[in-house]
Image (cartoon, rainbow, N blue to C red; front, side, top):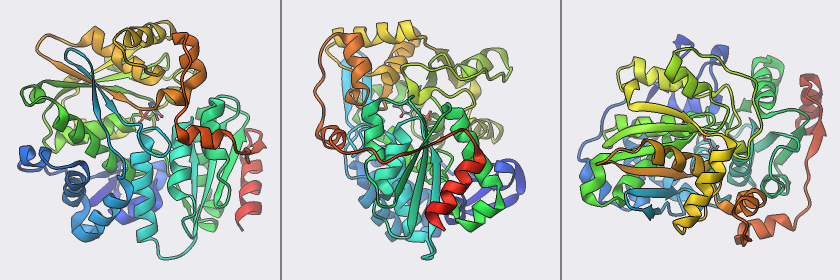
Length: 427
Ligand SMILES: *Cc1c(COP(=O)(O)O)cnc(C)c1O
């Protein structure tokens, strides 16, 4: 697979190089030059998740990694299911939260960790990533204990639910966590600055595990197939996917799945009040505003870093922008949606509820809606209990983590302070 830097067409790399580098020159994202559709989609849909996902990734990167290695990577990464739960007539939730950290980011994080450790040449690598919650946990768990890989995770201090923090600040060993006195966009900016600093980039062999890493996106393509495979056969070509979006990696993966030939009718990008994309889709003007904090905090992003990849899919002629609708849901309607879901007998959390709300507003007759359940409700226990007025029990992963001591270091929003800290830790 050849990938091109979207900011510099002369910078082309292999899949392995893109996985190792994360970002290219001028902070450009890597993206496949050419996405060939797959054949026999129906046969593919008949296979079990890991077997089908192996075939999808073999199609995408098998030429380079070899089919056998791809199979090993998928079998190590995809060890949990992605069930499609029927919520009511014609509306389903694709539950992506049955992995070790109870969020969809386990799929991409675990596949990326497998890729990196299998293609590394043994030299120590530093993963530097910013998280608004779920990425940190997924990356931390995926890399915990992997030799020669150190992980540094920045997160906005006080802006992540305490339980969520526990999932990644308590691991220790090769997992280093930093609470930055700033919001998520500022954390993301610190990461970008570090990648632009040759002393740090080369001195610590930096790699990013954000959703900018192409391996994560390619892994996420697989669960869109898993959703369609579980739909009643007569509904398969009527599916509208509603994707709760922050950095827009999840939606990018969905559009790649459609490009591969999966019969998805159209997409809805649901955001919270950080609505840069919905406004852009309706006005044509890209005008990010300062990020505001919401209860769907994994989507508190006003400058979504995967958006250029969606533009690339449009420019390459793979995707018709008319098939994407943006919709912003405010705090009040997020709560309304959570209560409506409960009335259907389905307990959900704010991110998925936003996507559900978009479906109930936008789904047309003769369409079937699938919204992505991006996190387990218990990850947002305080908010969910507050809104729904009933207690939630914790799954085992959370009970275990909540009993452990947090190990994060606190730093101001200051690049030099971060740089010193990383050198002290890792050099
Ligand atoms: C990361 C995350 C999102 C946003 O996904 P993107 O790929 O960044 O758009 C939505 N919901 C939850 C629970 C998340 O953790």
